[in-house]
Image (cartoon, rainbow, N blue to C red; front, side):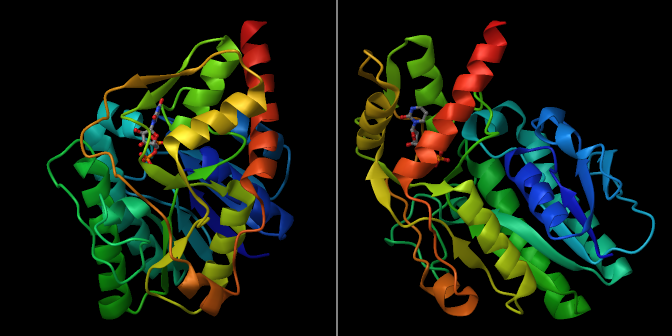
Length: 315
Ligand code: UDP
């Protein structure tokens, strides 16, 4: 049985990856320090003989006994609110954590895939963003701790590939949503849906003309799986190119939830990217991948999930 280590395994993306690799017949070791992760996301896996959980912070030396075939490094705070709250840990998990996991990959002869982000493009001056665009990042702004940690992560991953011959993969993830996002993580989708469910107005930052492109989690997981199994070591964008302004997005959520509330406008946070849309030509070409789930479909499933979470909170 092949063995895979998934860091951030109790988080939003990590937990979906655990499910996928269990389904594919792997022995899955999930690792998480539970700062932003939640054991409820993987509770259903604990009874399985081919699932293990290590409560550990990957910024510290990582030890995993036995063989390892694959490592997926998904440990990191990933929402602006989270990395403003814990900036140093964010820097450490992207830098020291990645270094530890690359060392582990080298020692075990494992292939490693690291989760990078569209944030490496910063507030992009090129649109849509292609992998060969180098970005427009403010290193000392509020997002700098995340963006620069991820840029360092890409650099050290390529260095381990080039100088140590480690098999590495780098995915640049664009905005992704779905069940198991945290209702309080400050991201626009849980914020809007949470507000609608509580009967509050939806807080749109700025005039809402900034754009994002939202990918449903199952599509992302498929892209990750294909990239891991490919032989492509340079960064690959995975995301849904369907671009929308935040104002339009708010209106979609109002329609979906049937809330009587309206959009209210708050100041735009510093360095908030004005536009973001992945160019996925490369993923289509080398992975035969493109997203399948429409926003309408994905939002419906996600809304049902949040309805359940909120009604359980009320109990
Ligand atoms: N946003 C908003 N209201 C909120 C939370 C976020 O209008 O309550 C905006 C935010 O300013 C940004 C966009 O929605 O322009 C996406 O924000 P998110 O934090 O989800 O992700 P990121 O900015 O990292 O893409």
